[in-house]
Amino acid sequence: MTRSNPPPHIRLTPEIRKNRALADVLDKLAFDMFLLWKRTGGSTDSIEEGEQVQTSTNSRVSRNAARINSLELKEFEIIPTTVSLTAEEFQIIVCKNVSEITITLDPDALEGDEVHIKRRGGSVIVAGSIDGFTNKTINVLNYSMHLVFDGADWSEI
Image (cartoon, rainbow, N blue to C red; front, side, top):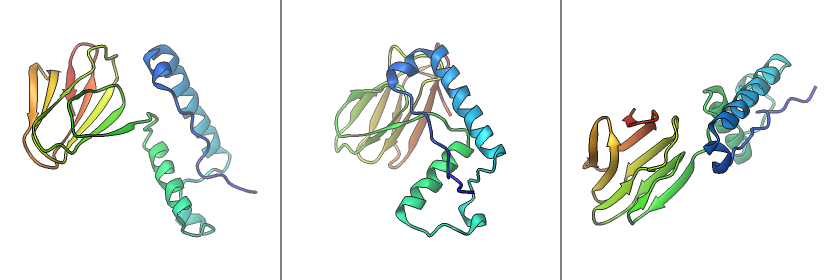
């Protein structure tokens, strides 16, 4: 029997993610597909199977399997920036600025939206309602914020 590692992953577009009900149904479907795959002999442990040769492709497969195993079914877009911008849902923003910039949190965010902001350069102001504060500043080099929107406010996780 040939095993696939991991099973195909459903990638949801940002437009579909905005329709929370549809996104939730598709996320549930993807999770059910993963459970079915596991119950029919699928494995996410390439070391245990001992059949895979370590290549860059297998490394990518292992990372994808780990993401599915952790039930992280969201697709994040990585955005490097040196200038101020407005964050959108499911982004990882890597700030490589020299002078201070502002990352404005999505004013039209939906409950469950997430954003990661990493400071790699100068100071970063994160504008939006975060844990009851109007703005927060990332003053520490290489510090990152993981933010989740609860429908009314962003929470730093």
